[in-house]
Length: 414
Ligand SMILES: *Cc1c(COP(=O)(O)O)cnc(C)c1O
Image (cartoon, rainbow, N blue to C red; front, side):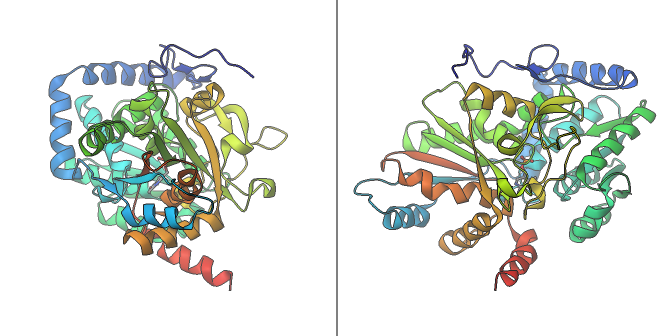
């Protein structure tokens, strides 16, 4: 199928929040004024040099940016040595080290922006949803820093599964509210947060953790995360005198990936890969690959690829990586998929755990299981490229939180 390519991949969404047929704002009448208010405030903040300057200050002194761009020399050598039939090939691998950010992942980039926006709007009560707990921890962290009350909605099943992050949020002063509806996981937590927002319109700011939700969230979260790609451009130019040749990142809802990809979308020679979680394998039905195993529908205020049964009911996602098991994907990713600009791949639990172990031993970096999904595709992609091909992997987070899951997974295979 040939699709009409736009002049630029970077101008979306349109004024109603659409990326092609995706995105939009499918919300209750009562939420509309809030969403419009947020959009107005965000557009003003974006154009205000004072807001940007203050954010840059916090990014440097609190988050710890810029995060390094690191040449993964031993992984590069390992791939060159082990890939069969390589005479002269094997790309040069770089890691964009988002795992070194305060709180251990990329999520803080977005939360900082939204909490600063909340303060600017005079909203003094922050709510958030969380699945694995990482977005909840980032939100609780910045609410502590700025002295704001924080309520985190979390599915009751996730509260049980992700105890350490629940304890972190409480230590940071946040209230964690277990959600008992539906499957009692992330999707239900997000529904509950939207309900809270409608009933507390005057003082509440809803801090969304992913590039989904009603417009302007997908664009706003992308913009806050785009610091990843902007830094990568500068750092690669400084290191190699040119831009990278390929980019690769894992996808839960998609902010880590979109943040790396967006500044490069119009350099069409750059190959871009998003990696979804294939769990037990796409045919098993137990996975979190919305593009590979889903179809377009509406959830949480936007149209996008979703995991659904034949009746259109949302089905639970599965992945060994709790941060990837969202049953949808950001609408901009859905559009980039249909346009053929980003290629979507998927990686099983087994492959991700193998990559987790390999990266730890070769580079002395224990990656998050989420990031290990991107790493798992690197050997195969890099082996097909010449030695002067520069490949950047988004190392979205660190893996301390995943040691128990990996241990249990390896035990179960014995
Ligand atoms: C949440 C999380 C992800 C998921 O990526 P999205 O940006 O939500 O697509 C990836 N890596 C880490 C370390 C995470 O915490």
